[in-house]
Amino acid sequence: MVVFVGFAISAVLIFYFIFKNSTQNNSAPFTASIVASYEQGKISFGLPIILKIPKINVESGIEYVGLTSDGAMDVPKNQDNVAWFKLGQRPGEDGSAVIAGHYGLKDGKPSVFDNLHKLVKGDKLYIEDDQGKAISFVVREIKSYDPQANATEVFNSNDGKSHLNLITCEGTWDEIFKTYSQRLVVFTDRE
Image (cartoon, rainbow, N blue to C red; front, side):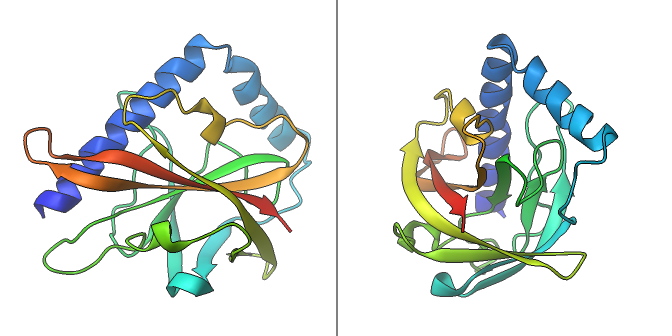
């Protein structure tokens, strides 16, 4: 339970800093473009319902999350599920869709992204949506971040391509702050 709570707290902190920094760096046009695309009916992808990562035996339900009361991306409620940031892009749309998942043991049970660090460039993952479509993504890059680092690149992309970025914790557990020392981000591109 301590690990689970620690992850939740650390996730809140990282996403707080990400959104705090991104709002200070003119992210309002990003948000406005999301709203505009919804209003103009440009969405051609359904809502994501399942994430599959064959290499690490992940087949997870997808929760939909927004922001916490302090402006951070929320986290999945269930350690077996992942959480899609519903205020951003849908997987498959141009831009960066973001999915977070827990790391670490809770009541002796592993979390969904415990083995995310085993992915390498070229590995594939899949999103199934509520329209029955499967969208394929290929790992491009894996990065570690300090929890206080500015990681706006995780949420923003302006290269005209479709990306899906996966986020979890990694590193050593800090008993004092009840969080892990690093954040792991897997950057993928639509195939």
